[in-house]
Image (cartoon, rainbow, N blue to C red; front, side):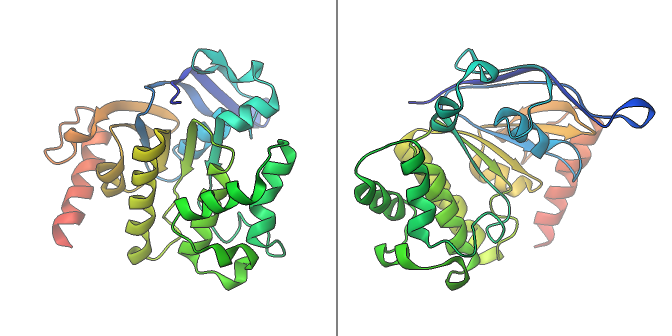
Length: 253
């Protein structure tokens, strides 16, 4: 089942008093069911903060966030975890070094009281292209790409409708990045996920996304279709500059 995602006037402030810093001044986006929606912009533009608000990893935001019309604040924790999962940027930091892959995958199944653990774990590993004997391996025995595949399997195992992807390939070697992106593409086609993808790489957006929003200092400057990238159809000066720089870089490589 695919879901829609809407944020309306989403804002968050860190700190208090004269030193308070408003990171998101009021972000409104609308993501269609089954869409891959990108958030792009330079470091510190608020992309990952938006994901953390949607997932309620950060919960002191103002505004409104709805999944299929239901406020995330009204969703019980168990329902929210079954509906959305997040894949983090760092495959080295997101897995516990002393937990085997079997433990990593079985923990969410145990918490959510799901049955058929072995079958679900096998399906999750197979879906991300890893052999079943990896269940008894530990993170230090895996490459960066394999760790990220395990992290994706962990996100998939509860069969969510929405995946939040926070720069899922930026910590990986270039040769592995394409493998992970193609894997995510195949999974979306097979399972019909809704994706929100944070990246600073417009080549990733061009490969994965239907539409994308360009962020600058916490604000959305423009929302564009993927087709706007090759001919740089952006109208906002910063968005034009960002796409132009990316096209120039791609042209040199």
